[in-house]
Image 1 (cartoon, rainbow, N blue to C red):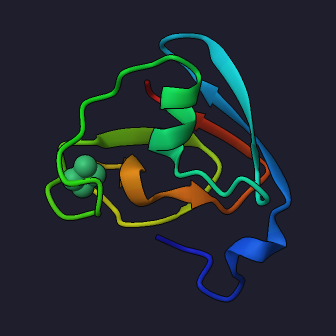
Image 2 (tube, helix red, strand yellow):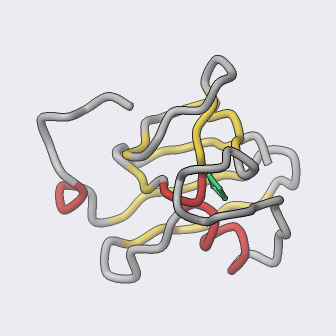
Length: 94
Ligand code: FES
């Protein structure tokens, strides 16, 4: 994760694109969903396990932008169950 000098409140709204499914969603600070929850709201069914950033089942690649949340093992990997936008334009390999 990067961007430690600012917190989630700095982003009011982010455009999140799930690239494999070609779905675009708007994330808002008001709703404050994780990327996983946002994907589920879009009707996607990503794999998950613990939903608390521990197991790594939900790991996906971030292709554009930045998130707050745990880094995964793969290059660009993030655990989407605990990730929230840290930039206004995000693309996730999902
Ligand atoms: S579901 Fe376990 S780390 Fe995300």
